[in-house]
Length: 127
Image (cartoon, rainbow, N blue to C red; front, side, top):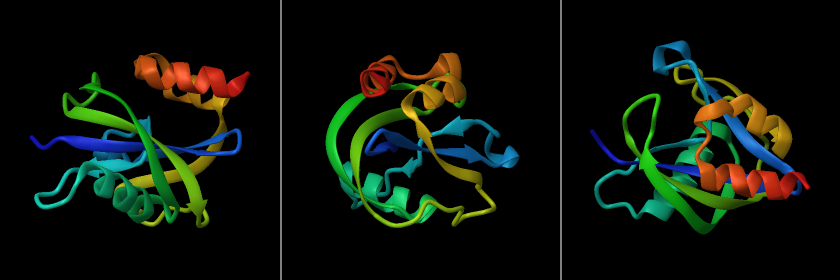
């Protein structure tokens, strides 16, 4: 099982969130994917965000890592800054929706499994 890296992309007071297709768990998450051999984690985050959402971002800092409670994969979270692009479903087989949510909406949508350091970042953003 490969390690996964995801981008918590922030644009002003909004955060980029995706809904995975039912075949991929059907849950709300941040865009990201498995780290491929030969790629850095930061490169993976930027590439996966663009591939899944059409959004170009820049990694700001690492927020932490854990084993994800829904899929059991080792996952690292990276705070990212929006650079350009329009949020849209670019991989319909894997993703049902791509949306910008307010920080408060994202906390509610992502639910009780939201990684504590990410929740703290979004809570601060919501103030």
